[in-house]
Image (tube, rainbow, N blue to C red):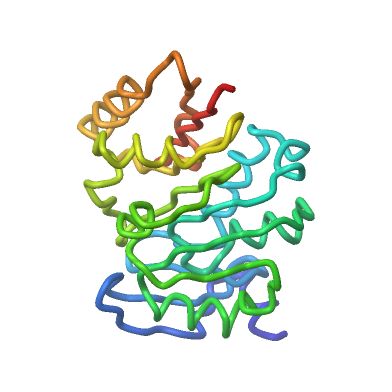
Length: 221
């Protein structure tokens, strides 16, 4: 409790671990809440939770509540899952895919992710999982970073078409991206241009928390 109170004055780091995938993982009390960070960016809770909450609000909480199955690619500490369950009161199935076992151990220990009964965690590469899954989803949340880097496969046409294929009618994709230079702007515009406008509607929500841009895609019936 003292650490939480002190964190309103300055951040209090309570855990730090080297990770092969994320280099460094840190758990910190900041402004009265626990956050999960990598060396250079916020991974869960804090600003990232605000970003994805904004995206879900844009889709519409009422629509989210009617969904049966949500897929989260890139779990980290599970802040978007907590938003779905604790804030929106979503009670359908959630499948979370995370490649880094260290992340899940930390998410369970510090953020109680393993207490969420409707959540199934799959330790796998997101690309491999997307190729293998037989399910279709009402909402696919893509939030995959290695520190500040985003894997190239996320923006390849093959992957985006596969993700779109996995959507149910009137399903949504919520894709969190980072914009650090003009090349990233070009990358995102190219990504949007390759989405079939006859089957999907798409939009960008730019400059959220300075460097993040959300892409929202909806599948038509």
